[in-house]
Image 1 (tube, rainbow, N blue to C red):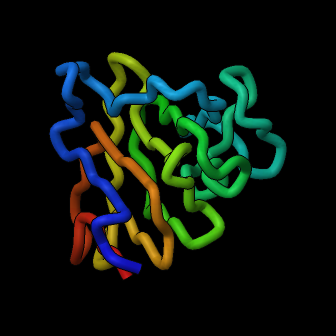
Image 2: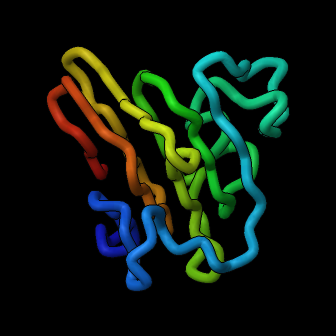
Length: 133
């Protein structure tokens, strides 16, 4: 799968100059928070998941809204791929800071996934910020 199918928006601005990736296509929002739960969460703002990886498996082709905090590694695989018409967007909640911090590993690992747009998320530590396999 060619790397051009995965878009990374490091400055998290689009053609219109907004602060987040362009999500003008009507897509479902799935929420993630550092105090959420992958076991009992439902992806709503009231019951968010704890990890982006879990949220991405819930509804590929959605907008994953990550609430402020520090998170561990994000792993995305072929089951999290969006489509050309409905990519999976991963972005922070408006006005919130999201950091992915790991020791000695990849912060964000994308393996055989496509049509994913990531913007506005900081990475720290690790051997790679984002690795596409």
